[in-house]
Length: 407
Image 1: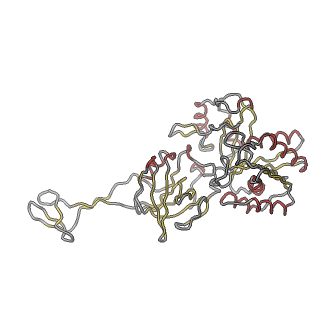
Image 2: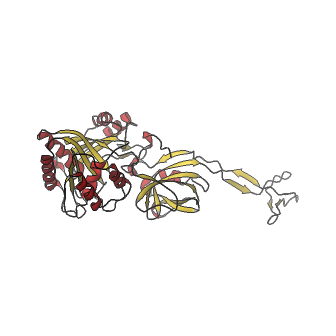
Image 3: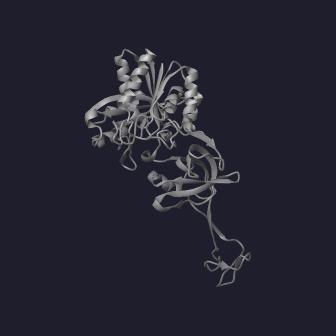
């Protein structure tokens, strides 16, 4: 059977992955075999998400009816029903739901009605609480088919420590990253000297390590020193795969979806109030604004070096009429130049304009020329892919250490 669960957490506490890790242990205690635990991130732009818009799925051998009872009882025991946006859903089905539903849920928006219709056709056991919105993520989880996959080990706190300050040795986190990168990533941000993998919210997660395989995330995890830990779970996941991205074109982008868009820089980048950097790209007679927000830190320095005429691929979510950049490819660079009056060959003095269309003349010897002095601007930028730092990377965004996209 496949078990899907979603929307049990809240900004004030709990975590759907923690509930899932507890469920794994309860199913095993009931003599069921858990063959895979999967963490499925969905459209990151969903406005009603509680945090990271993640659902969980388990591939299990055992009694479906008993598994459904255990799953529902655990949701009622642990879910944070006090939060308005927490609306849990549980699904148990004997076969995979149509993967098209997962694809839509990770790139677009789905409705509860669409999910229920699929569940009814599949003869699934399911239950939704409150407005039942969690059935969308739970259904997407049991429909998920991961063309690309990564791993994450999530280390949880002992329940008595929930809501208290975390204690994870900073030096060991940086050492773990140095020893296992690029096979693991986003444990820390070395450039900005920031720890990334330890959350600040009052949920059960102590820290999480992301990487290309269970072996690599475990290798990093074993180097980390911390407070006493509770349970730990390795997840198969779509994190770091760019599964949320769609091909898009300037002038034809839908709000709250994520795209990669080819275009030519149409305006010089401007730094706005708050340190946000804005510029426009165009293609086919349409233009769209691109934004590098202050949290992207040193990435903005790269964006400020763009000039009109540069050809790029802009990647990110389209929100409030802007592409919020996750990464960018510089396809080719324009060759801007400074034009100024030439030097007089006889006097070695800078000439002045002799009037519109009349060229230049030397004030000292009256020498004349029609040609200006043109000097190409030397640029430090190189074509290639550039990404935001780990501190501002979204869960689904594929880090360049995993390979460059082919767009």
